[in-house]
Length: 255
Image: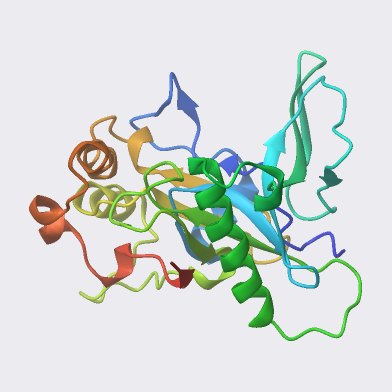
């Protein structure tokens, strides 16, 4: 795999933060973060679970963190790419990512809630795989986000599970009023007015990704208020005025 390819590893913060809050005077964590903000590709950050689908076998995988634990027999390594697979702090491993396949529905009782969800996941993965044309007989993992009411109760998505393909979530940084979101003032303003989790910005050369999260500006951001409301009511009527086309992820498949 190319060292610049998106591989599902740990994404760094765009801005320096303390106690889960960005500093009032925003500071980039690195020159690379600065370049990603001003010159890189921006993607909508989607509230869900980082997953992957092997488009040859149709197997759906979920990313698991197994720091300082024995590696499970059924997991596979994240490939090398633009993000680190393993991170350490004070010589202690804090992140050690792998792909673990979802259980097949045949492995659980067909009367359980888990069975019904697994049937949907595997059916969506099969549909997604058939939509991809490949001549590669090796594993061909495509990174996706599984979202929905059964996956972190993604606000605004009423289905139990949907597939959101990461690289399809590109965001137009030129806003409808003709201004750009690529200023420290405008990013604050935009996220204070839109109920989205945030953005992922990729470096124009290394493709390394950096995340910007709404709740790191304000713990009571619209996204988190919407999320709490959604978990309780599963209805977005009162938030409809905050929702527009650029806030909604592009679904590949839903059931």
